[in-house]
Amino acid sequence: MVTLTSISQLVLLVIIIIIYYISTILSTSGKLSLKIRRLPAIDAMEEAVGRCAETGKPLVYTIGQGSISDTNAPMMLAGLTALGFVGEKAAKVGVKIKSVFGYAEEVLIAEGLLRDAYRLHGQDLEEGMVQYQSPQGYAWTAYVIGLIQREKPGANIMIGNTTGETMGVIESASMVGAIQIGGSTNPVMLPYMVVGCDYCLLMEEIFAIGAYISKDPYSLGAMAAQDYSRLLAIILLILGSVLSFFGINIIKTLLTIK
Amino acid sequence: MYMSQKILTKTVPILILATVVIITVSDFFITYDLLQNSAKVLAQWATIVSAFILLIGIINISHYRFSSLRKKVDTKEKLFSIWFLFLLGLTFILGVINIQDPTFTWLYGNYARWSSTVQSMLAFFIVAAAFRGLRARSKESVLLLIGGILILLSDMPLGGYIWSGFSDIGNWINSYPVNAGQTGLLIGAAFGAILLVLRLISGKERGFLGGD
Image 1 (tube, rainbow over the protein chains, first blue to last red):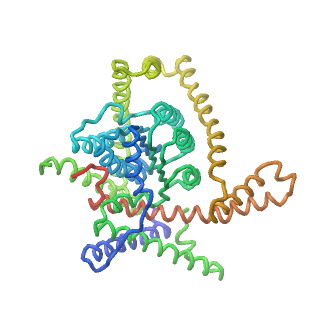
Image 2: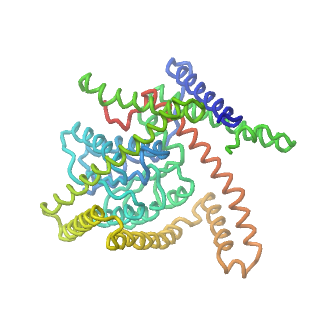
Image 3: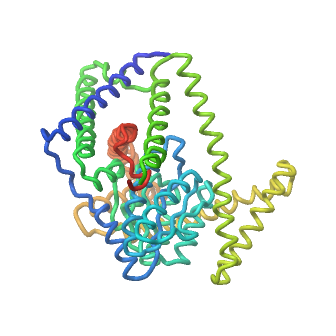
């Protein structure tokens, strides 16, 4: 059923799409000069691979628990994009990646990504580099904890939809002295990640991985659109708060999901 | 990469993704029978494909475990592989024969106990992380430390014995600064996700499809 709320949400979505197209057009035509701020966590991925190469240890990579066929898809795809980047760096210096997934569809994508990366550097994807484990959270966690304790990796990277398993994996990797990079959009798990990891990608920063790596004008324009959209949200929040203070609840009514 | 291969591995997945996203999002906003039915069929397809892909996952892990039995790996790894393959086979056979079988339900019910065991270990991990993390090294970490202590005192029975006001302070921190901060973070992440999907359906974000 079409409601006032769904119309206002559609209008908001259309505004975001317009902002996106204007930003990308201006950025690609050179009318908008953009720079992306430094994200130490992405820069540190090369350092993590380097540490593994120096010590001869593997790198453990996980994207948390979630499927690419549900609402977790953007987080999982961001994690897989970062896996492709890390895979290329690792293949270049001959570091073995051990990645563990809870959903089989991600196994297929990860195998494709890592096979391409290792083939590019004249190597084959070895067995056990991409492993499927249970979609049941704690079964998966137990396996990853065991894997970290057995393999003693030089680095642990976990970017994606991290849930209850986060703390167990981070602390296990900490016990074996691995350099750790985390990234999550789960605000409940984020504090654990900030405390436990050496570098951390906070919330929407994980969606910027692709743009940060490529740095092409189109992607930078899309990143600017993200900032402009956030500005729009701040304006709506302030306006809504001020109007509510005077007893006018129009913005609150329009944006409340019933 | 050959042109035909590029079309198959890059263009076709992006086209499928764009079609699915447009139909599903349109169904959320527009009430139209054809859209509704299409979205429903797509959701059913996703369920069927996910169930089928599970088979690939089982093949992946079984193949890895079988090959580790042949390889020169340490005894612990071999024992783990034997144990895994035994349990996988047993659960599969019992489940296929009769899913209501008491042995099968006992076996599956055990997962809940093992799961709780792993979950309870998290308490120790959290304490270890808090010990390392809650140190006054910078202005920000001092704020984190103060917040942590206040929440601890608010939630612990000991806090209530010392001063009843700790509970109110804890409730206020959770209801206002924490709630506002989390909402702000979620709004930012939501915009990030929307714009990632726009980049995906326009074919500009292809990192997850591998190198060109």
